[in-house]
Image (tube, rainbow, N blue to C red; front, side, top):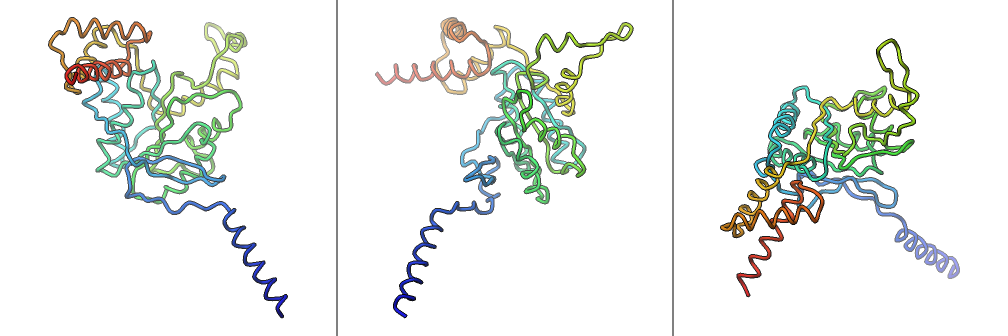
Length: 291
């Protein structure tokens, strides 16, 4: 009897240790905790995690992209009002406000039930599972894929096509895909692919490889293009952020010379570079004031 009791005790101890080694399944998503979420994986199990401090940028903060703002705001407004709306592909130069614009419309329409779930490119294969988890909720969800591009045969490529177009099942009506990319067709294009184009009369028909790449971007109903800023546009953005940070801008010529020099060292006149310069300028002013 004593041996049996000892055996039971050892078995219970072994089970306890095994339970400690087992992966802990994440709990239910706390939808009241945030307006922005991320798709995460722990021990191979995916879950939707609230973002504790979402980026609080607003539409008025985004300068010299008024046409793009109108398009995205209108499409998002239609979506939250349960009217027909399109998946969106935002493409163009680095630092011109593509991802910031998506975050800004989230902040504008969050009180109307809009929520955002950010999904990394390598997790796009999980899109059907993500959509299944949220399809019966009352909120309206933007699935956000930032800086998206694919190489040939990546599994997330086909998963994204299925969600954009639907397979045998209809795409959930409370979900849209908003993606940003520096490539209009989301995949690299090579010269040899253009060599297989067919000439039919005066028309050019692309080869199958090119058609396959174009087919993904064409599944986005709305294309919004962003362009590099001119010098005057860049300086206007600098002025906005310097004022926003309440930094000294009395000597406007000195400010602009410094801003242009900063852009020259970065090789870009973008909104992101303007914001980074303004932070540096404001920090220098504060240090000078305290010394």
